[in-house]
Length: 140
Image (cartoon, rainbow, N blue to C red; front, side, top):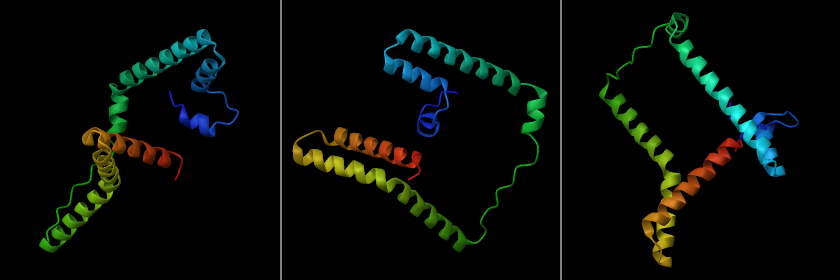
């Protein structure tokens, strides 16, 4: 309901309520921007209430429970467990490594520039995480 970035990037000439709010603010027409924001909030709350009510009905419960969940298969072989454990650890390290690198770089920068090591490291890690999320959102 309140997506802004997708219509901004891919919408073209399509008029979306979130973009209209943005354009009204850019024009300096704050009364229209506030009115459109209230309209968006009412639509969003109405949809939320509708879906919460619908989830409680028998029809939704019957549709959500179709099929059977797959049982988790345990790894019987000791060697296969070891390989799965090692692969899981490597995968976790690969996922954490970019943010950890930024954290360490920020800490080193602060240490040699006289700043707060922990705060600078956290700021660099947060900035890097946001940058990576932006790159992924743009399809990079």
